[in-house]
Length: 352
Image (cartoon, rainbow, N blue to C red; front, side, top):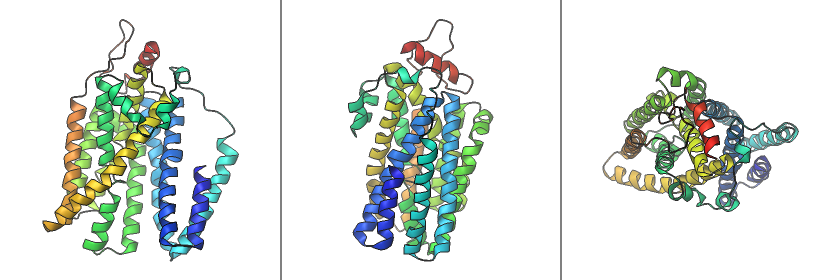
């Protein structure tokens, strides 16, 4: 469905590039990528992986998205015009549609150890845009903390900050469209590299807790660099920072399962939570950028993102241990490190 809708609207934008058509293409494109692209991919990974394996799988998925972000801006530079760019996008979307139709619908992925397929599903909660509220009202303290942590991480995500970054680069920094495209490609390369390095970095930092803490502080450094106009230098710490959500999603699936929520259900809730943050976030950042402009430096808006990163680290540090019931003699999963992730999955099964 996602590539089909994208093909229709991108072809229409190529033929009739009016303001309404371009706006509709942006809305439909972002909707299909978020709900029918990222969310469905993450749901499939959650069905076939668990614990630390799921964290690594999500990081690899991020790497794949990074490849697209590297290639797309470079292709746009080669087209030379807006209509040519949309024509090329339509051709690539058509190829994606054909690939998915022939390949991805031929076999089912086996369920992960721990029986997620047997967990109950609540269709109204999945369908409701506010279904994520159940993470805060029907689950324990750990799930509430991890859900709040995920919301904060979404609020400082590099993709959410792209509007502010592009405005400051092009209007205040005098960047050309070509420079902006090169920077976007470099940002994609950072995501790709970080996704590939995530399993090694988790081991280097002593587990997922240490890795996430490093990711938060790396994100803060990137935002501080942006506030000084050092957009190229700010990309370096994001090799770690952009992978901040991978462990969080894994923790949320493991612990929400102890409260009767299925994996696909939790993935839908995280998508709705991310959508809520991405609805409010640009409005708040726009107000912050206007205030920063009155103070003489619009880039100071990134101080707000750095502050949110600091709050996210505080939430991580004070997140309580899991309330999941576990058999006698089974280690606790408070740290969610790579050495205990499979135990967490088994504890989830026992609780369900």
